[in-house]
Length: 147
Image 1 (tube, helix red, strand yellow):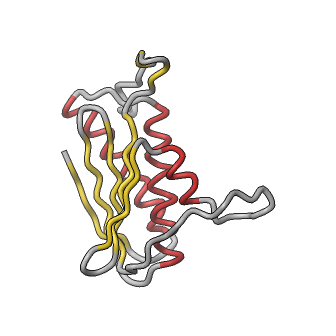
Image 2 (cartoon, helix red, strand yellow):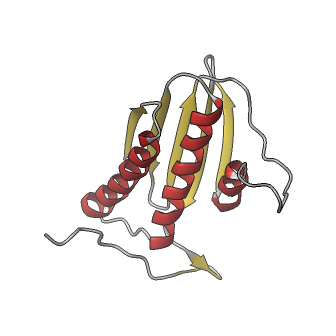
Protein backbone atom coordinates (compact mmCIF):
# COMPACT_ATOMS: atom_id res chain seq x y z
CA UNK A 1 0.00 0.00 0.00
CA UNK A 2 1.29 3.46 -0.84
CA UNK A 3 0.19 7.04 -1.27
CA UNK A 4 1.92 10.19 -2.39
CA UNK A 5 1.31 13.90 -2.53
CA UNK A 6 2.87 17.21 -3.47
CA UNK A 7 3.02 19.63 -0.57
CA UNK A 8 2.80 23.40 -0.84
CA UNK A 9 5.64 25.47 0.50
CA UNK A 10 3.67 27.19 3.25
CA UNK A 11 3.89 26.49 6.98
CA UNK A 12 0.53 24.69 6.83
CA UNK A 13 2.05 21.94 4.72
CA UNK A 14 3.77 20.44 7.77
CA UNK A 15 0.45 19.89 9.53
CA UNK A 16 -1.06 18.69 6.23
CA UNK A 17 1.74 16.12 5.88
CA UNK A 18 1.16 14.86 9.46
CA UNK A 19 -2.59 14.55 8.83
CA UNK A 20 -1.97 12.65 5.59
CA UNK A 21 0.36 10.25 7.42
CA UNK A 22 -2.23 9.61 10.14
CA UNK A 23 -4.99 9.05 7.57
CA UNK A 24 -2.72 6.65 5.67
CA UNK A 25 -2.07 4.59 8.82
CA UNK A 26 -5.79 4.62 9.64
CA UNK A 27 -6.54 3.30 6.16
CA UNK A 28 -3.93 0.53 6.56
CA UNK A 29 -5.55 -0.47 9.85
CA UNK A 30 -9.09 -0.39 8.52
CA UNK A 31 -8.61 -1.78 4.99
CA UNK A 32 -5.73 -4.20 5.55
CA UNK A 33 -6.19 -5.03 9.24
CA UNK A 34 -2.58 -4.17 10.06
CA UNK A 35 -1.53 -3.65 13.66
CA UNK A 36 -0.05 -0.21 14.26
CA UNK A 37 1.10 0.76 17.74
CA UNK A 38 0.45 4.20 19.20
CA UNK A 39 4.21 4.63 19.35
CA UNK A 40 4.54 3.91 15.61
CA UNK A 41 1.83 6.48 14.88
CA UNK A 42 3.66 9.05 16.98
CA UNK A 43 7.04 8.29 15.41
CA UNK A 44 5.58 8.46 11.90
CA UNK A 45 4.14 11.90 12.60
CA UNK A 46 7.44 13.00 14.16
CA UNK A 47 9.50 11.80 11.19
CA UNK A 48 7.10 13.41 8.70
CA UNK A 49 7.26 16.69 10.64
CA UNK A 50 11.04 16.74 10.84
CA UNK A 51 11.68 15.78 7.21
CA UNK A 52 9.12 18.21 5.78
CA UNK A 53 10.32 21.00 8.10
CA UNK A 54 13.92 20.49 6.97
CA UNK A 55 12.86 20.51 3.34
CA UNK A 56 10.95 23.78 3.82
CA UNK A 57 13.91 25.32 5.60
CA UNK A 58 16.76 24.22 3.35
CA UNK A 59 15.47 23.28 -0.12
CA UNK A 60 13.85 25.51 -2.72
CA UNK A 61 10.99 24.31 -4.84
CA UNK A 62 8.42 21.57 -4.52
CA UNK A 63 8.19 18.86 -1.86
CA UNK A 64 6.94 15.40 -2.67
CA UNK A 65 6.03 12.94 0.07
CA UNK A 66 5.31 9.27 -0.35
CA UNK A 67 4.17 6.84 2.34
CA UNK A 68 4.58 3.10 1.86
CA UNK A 69 3.53 0.33 4.19
CA UNK A 70 4.47 -3.32 4.50
CA UNK A 71 3.40 -5.91 7.02
CA UNK A 72 6.02 -4.60 9.48
CA UNK A 73 7.06 -1.02 8.59
CA UNK A 74 5.89 2.31 7.29
CA UNK A 75 8.31 4.18 5.04
CA UNK A 76 8.28 7.95 4.89
CA UNK A 77 9.87 9.23 1.68
CA UNK A 78 10.46 12.94 1.10
CA UNK A 79 11.87 14.33 -2.13
CA UNK A 80 13.12 17.87 -2.66
CA UNK A 81 14.93 19.73 -5.43
CA UNK A 82 18.19 20.44 -3.56
CA UNK A 83 20.90 17.87 -4.40
CA UNK A 84 22.90 18.70 -1.25
CA UNK A 85 23.09 15.75 1.13
CA UNK A 86 22.28 16.82 4.71
CA UNK A 87 24.33 15.62 7.64
CA UNK A 88 23.34 15.42 11.27
CA UNK A 89 25.19 17.90 13.44
CA UNK A 90 27.22 16.87 16.44
CA UNK A 91 25.22 16.86 19.66
CA UNK A 92 25.13 20.20 21.44
CA UNK A 93 22.86 20.57 24.49
CA UNK A 94 23.08 24.38 24.18
CA UNK A 95 21.85 24.46 20.57
CA UNK A 96 18.22 25.40 20.06
CA UNK A 97 16.83 23.73 16.96
CA UNK A 98 18.78 21.95 14.26
CA UNK A 99 18.16 18.49 15.72
CA UNK A 100 15.68 17.21 13.11
CA UNK A 101 17.98 14.88 11.23
CA UNK A 102 19.46 13.56 14.49
CA UNK A 103 15.96 12.76 15.71
CA UNK A 104 14.93 11.00 12.49
CA UNK A 105 18.10 8.90 12.44
CA UNK A 106 17.59 7.97 16.11
CA UNK A 107 13.99 6.74 15.76
CA UNK A 108 14.09 5.14 12.30
CA UNK A 109 14.85 1.47 11.78
CA UNK A 110 16.39 2.38 8.45
CA UNK A 111 17.46 5.77 7.09
CA UNK A 112 18.72 6.43 3.56
CA UNK A 113 19.50 9.43 1.40
CA UNK A 114 19.73 9.05 -2.38
CA UNK A 115 20.81 11.77 -4.76
CA UNK A 116 18.45 11.88 -7.75
CA UNK A 117 18.86 13.43 -11.22
CA UNK A 118 17.08 16.41 -9.73
CA UNK A 119 17.39 16.80 -5.98
CA UNK A 120 17.42 14.04 -3.39
CA UNK A 121 15.15 11.45 -1.80
CA UNK A 122 15.22 10.74 1.93
CA UNK A 123 13.64 7.53 3.24
CA UNK A 124 13.03 6.64 6.88
CA UNK A 125 11.43 3.33 7.94
CA UNK A 126 9.52 2.96 11.18
CA UNK A 127 8.39 -0.33 12.75
CA UNK A 128 4.59 -0.65 12.95
CA UNK A 129 4.72 -2.35 16.34
CA UNK A 130 7.02 -1.88 19.28
CA UNK A 131 9.19 -4.77 20.27
CA UNK A 132 10.66 -5.41 23.67
CA UNK A 133 13.03 -8.36 23.88
CA UNK A 134 11.63 -9.70 20.60
CA UNK A 135 8.01 -9.69 21.81
CA UNK A 136 5.55 -7.26 20.33
CA UNK A 137 3.85 -4.88 22.73
CA UNK A 138 0.10 -4.47 22.51
CA UNK A 139 -0.66 -2.51 19.35
CA UNK A 140 -3.54 -0.17 18.91
CA UNK A 141 -5.53 -1.58 16.04
CA UNK A 142 -8.59 0.63 15.65
CA UNK A 143 -8.34 4.40 15.26
CA UNK A 144 -11.81 5.17 13.96
CA UNK A 145 -13.40 8.19 15.58
CA UNK A 146 -16.78 7.99 17.23
CA UNK A 147 -19.35 10.22 15.58
